[in-house]
Structures are given as structure tokens and as C-alpha cells.
Image (cartoon, rainbow, N blue to C red):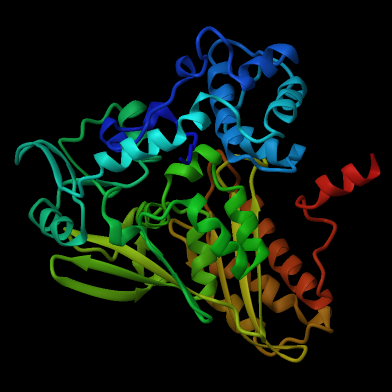
Length: 431
């Protein structure tokens, strides 16, 4: 059994088919509090009645990870999706350190084998279609019926993790007559890896993709760690993040800088395109009616390539980027021979910086005085967005500075202390 926290408010009923649903009301057994609940009481970790149940359930999932040793950083990550303003988090973290630092020992772990057996028996591998042609919830079990159904109903809403579409319903009050859920399509949930390339199926969640992406480069791993929250990463998918087409999505610019390709399918036909070609304009994509994202192929770095990626947002955890910059540089010794640079948040789509890339070619890492033209080119490549997250002027300055940071770190071979990432460890060492 593997328990993951999810945001119940944006989860469609059909998405929990074949799964065990656990709520805070299920935790106490025969009148005794669950170990997480008991620790919250003992350490005075209660918040208001709105937030406490969600906090307890996040810690329940962490409790069942059985992670040892468990540090304060891991607990903070687990709680990043539970934003409460009532009081401090110290007693809650203390409760987590108390309860979650030991192997799980509750009724769920004791009955885990029986629970798993019951779920396996529910997995019949059959396609699901509820209601009829004009209004339905469908959950195909494989790609062939998915492709046929979507080709027949190109007006249907395709859902994977529902972390965005769920908000259309709950906040936008949108009624969706036709929903196709991809969660049962086995072929879309695969990760394939070799020495040169990582291929990620469209329904692979951010949590599932994290280890493989972090192996490509630590910066990519850090981007994934700050992607939404644990609840979002447990539900949201790689394909959904791309197909959503958000101009401020985190993954697309990083994948574009790495040279990723996208596989699409419509009916019986499939095609592969460069990821940057998929994004045409704001919320417009190179995707025909009834065509869906199958998988994304991400090249691994060669020995003479370096990668840097930085996310800038108002809040460190669980916040949408103001700017995300990603940089892949190809080196011949200390000279740049090729560059791929992409930004999110700078235009209506995730977009490469063509002039900047050209200006970087030929530069010496040992001569910072020669970098000026490449830094200036970032302002010519974009007319930055101007919205409540950041002004156009701010975004333009940040983009230039992130390129300078990438060049400086590549030149020195070190992660500079000016990063937000790493300060946490420095502070702990000082204490």
C-alpha cells in the first residue's frame, strides 16, 4: 500500500475508482487517536478547524512513508501545501518529528496486505463509460479506445490529475459535459530511460518523475521539489503540465532548454515534434482536434554540456513562477559552442531566447567582460508579461540576472551562495 495526500476539493469522483479513500474521520481506531493525531495533541499543534484536518492527513501520508531519518526539511516539504495563517508551525513540526520518525504502526499498516488484496481484486482492466454520447465520464483502460473515443468526441475535456481542470469547476463554476480521464491508460504511465534519453508518459505524476528528472541535473530536481506541493505533485502529471500550455509553467521551459520532443496521437496516427513547436500563442497549441499528448522525450546531458535552471516566485513554496529561466550550454574547454535558453513567464508561451543563444556562442567563460551583448539580448528576445505576479520591467531585469548567474556558476563550477536554495543548510550549520 502506498498512501498519497491529495486535494479533495479538486478531485473528481471517478478518479478514486479502484483506490482506497482515507479521510481524517477514518484515522482513530476504537476510540484511540491515530499516532499523528496523538502527537498533534501532545505538542499543542492544533490550528483552526479548516486547516487541522488537512495538516493531519498530510502528516498521515508522511507517517506511512516510513522515512528514516526524518529531518525538519522533509517535514516542511510535506506541509508546504497546507498554508494556514492561524499560528506558528513549530509545534506541528515537533509533532511530526515525534510521530513520523518511527516505522508506521497503526491499523492501516497492520491490515495493509488485506487492503492491497482488495484493491487488486477491483482492478478489472475494463474501459469505463458512465452515461451516454452527449454527457459522460469515460476512463479508457488502454490507448486504442482512448484514441478512438477522443477522435469521436474532440470537444471532450481530457483530464489527468485534474489539478487545473478541477479549479475550472470549483472556482469557474464550469460545467463539463464530456470528461475523459486518463488515469487508467497503462501505456501513458510508463517511464523509459537509457543512457541518452528519458521518456516520460503523459500520466506520470510529478512525484513519480522526480527521481529520474533529478538524475538529469540537480537543478531540475529542485524545480520539481518546488513544483506546487506534495498534494499537487501526487496528482498533477507531466503531460498535463505541458498540454495545459501555461505561459508560467515550470516544466516546459526547462524541457525546451534540454531539447525535449513531444509525442502526440490522433486516432491511429502519431507524430513527434520539438516541444518548443507545440506552443504557438497564449493557450494555442499545435494540436489538432482529438489529438492528445502521449509522452515527452528529454535528452540527457552530454559530458561537455552544463545545465542551470532557476525559479523566481514571491513565495518560495507552492507558488507560481514570476520567471523561470533554463540554460543548457555546450562547451569546448572554456568556450561556449552552442546554447539553448528558454524562459517561462516572459511571454504568452514558454519560449526560447533566439538572439541570446546566438550571442552566447563563442563567449569565453573566463572573460565576463565579453558577456554584455548576450545579457542585453534577453531584452530583445521578449516583451515580458506585466501582471499582478510581476511587472514587465522586473521580469526583464530578472531574466538578464538569471543568465548572468548561469554563466557565473558554469564558469566557477560552483553553486553560488546567492541562491535561495542552500541557505537552509547554512542556517542549520550556524545554529
